Length: 205
Image (cartoon, rainbow, N blue to C red; front, side, top):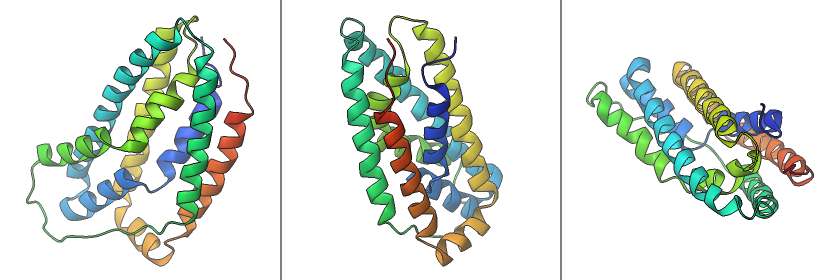
């Protein structure tokens, strides 16, 4: 009942969620500007957009891989190379947080919209859900159940780490200011390792 390489999937998304990408920086900024409770609407917007992306991308790709399951191996290589590309970006990137002291001037819907739109049109998220996410699914074996498990895991872990980022936003902002390269470089190294794991893992169909 467990999807193919489920633990590898959990490791991969955990590294991506720990890394301070655009969605993490957005919720840190909104938490510091508008308070922790309000900033959670940004997190809800993010995971809502991701759920829509997962459903659209997975079932669109399913129509393609159902008659041609060998395409998943191609997706595995594209996804692995994309992780290497992300790792190289992280290794050379500095992370910064911009704080705008305009407290309590935006509604919960505005903050939800921030998270929703930034996630929905994120090129990285689109590539992940179209190319990498389907490689953890077998089109001929409990597809719907496995999809539900992976989507639930992704949404839960994403919102969990977004909540942590929002809850300790001031400390994270200070840390990122003092050590702008550390987290990005550690994440880059971890992504290189996961890329190796994915490219060396056989997809069982």
